[in-house]
Image (tube, rainbow, N blue to C red):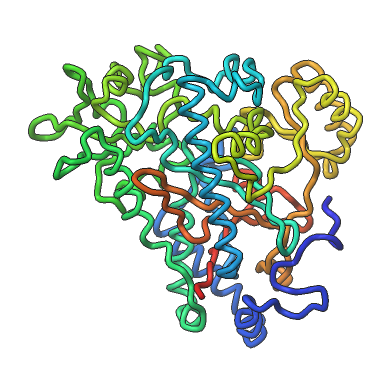
Length: 474
């Protein structure tokens, strides 16, 4: 359990007065009747249910399709705070793309001894098939979700870099659309940076990395595993918002080194594939031979430079949790600058000294699977039972290289609508970044909120919710 006395309250200062960027919202909340937010929450749920904004939960006993709980109180970030955050994010994503180019080419960072070679070359996220290949504009990870947490007024940490197939941007956009419907008067009193341009920016980014960007018209598709994927709503949402086709592997084929889409008329050559399926399933001829989701021959067409895959295969090595501890070194190595945004101190359990420390302090730290996501396969020591700690210790001792550990941070909290009224709940933030002909960072991002009192787990699969994020303009 986090210490409720020590977290940073984003709305209220130490004296209990609203911080400047929250002053109008605080006054607005004071003026509303007791049942106002409850009614608005029900209205929001009706909107989400009508639109079909759901996510799948694998292995759950209850229905697999759920609505993500939506909190109607926005999170507010000042213009000055956002300038610092966006500068740090920009620095980070450029360095990560430089890192990806390096490890698939000269591997200078390994030669310099800044990262242990085995940590890269023996990592399942590293794809030898990408060695020597340079994608368009040297961009490997075109869409990145950088997870941030705040612990004090001026202190933010990066929890992880999602460089493979980050999700959640559709919820960011639908949250904003819902807020504008429910509270138009609030937007009139705040200068909120808009997020509505994301699909247009995404389309421009994808077009800019086509094999032949000079073509007057690019054919772009979103490749989905299908309707049973947990993020299928988002795949369909993005394809529709960009005005491009949503396809499955069976809708595409390779002929003479080019990728084509089946249509009711004649096949149409595809220039860019925004893939939302994992590396292993992209091409059964190159990767998993049992894959029914990918396109036979796709990787050869990609290596021939006849189609662009976004994000590139092999980008997972940049957000692997074992590599995370080295990101500050990566930033310094490729930019010559100190990181603007801090990493969380991390113990790599593959190192004997780190493992010994982690085993001695399981009750106080967070342990994560190197390839885990969604809040699964992790131990939050302060909230775990003695039995859970004993069982996790056995797993950790059996396979230590599969885990990292971090201290338990006192995540900042934002005002949140709960059954008893308005109360602080812990939050994180996932800004979305697009990298192509330029770096485009959407103001704000997706704020995830732990709805249970004292909980630090914000993942929707673990009972967390989301809220709209407002970046105020000067």
